[in-house]
Image 1 (cartoon, rainbow, N blue to C red):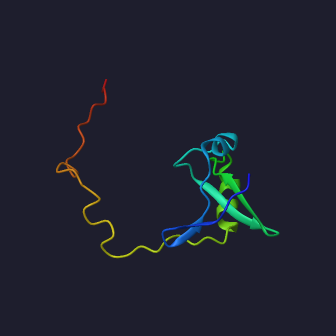
Image 2: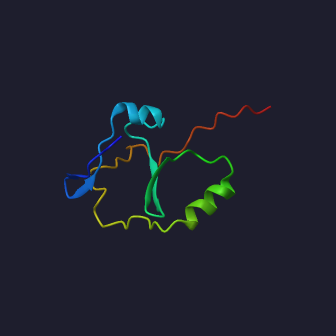
Image 3: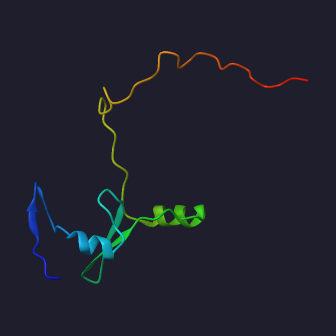
Length: 95
C-alpha cells in the first residue's frame, strides 16, 4: 500500500484503511506501540503480557516518560460519592 504522510492537526500521520487495520488485527481505539528500527516505523498491538516481570522489564526499558500531571487537570472529571466514607456493613456469618 502506497501512503502519503498528511497533516493531522499539529501533527503528521497516515490514515489506515479498515482493510489494513483488519489484517493487522487492530481496531480504532486500540493501544499500539510505535517504534523506529533501522529507519522503519513499526506498529505493534499492545497486548497484555501475562508474565508481570516481562511486562515490568518491557515498560522500564522503553524511553517513554509518563505524562506530567498538572494542577487542576482533573477538576470536574472526578466525582466522589456522598457516602464515600460511610462504614461498610459487616455481613459476615458468625457462628
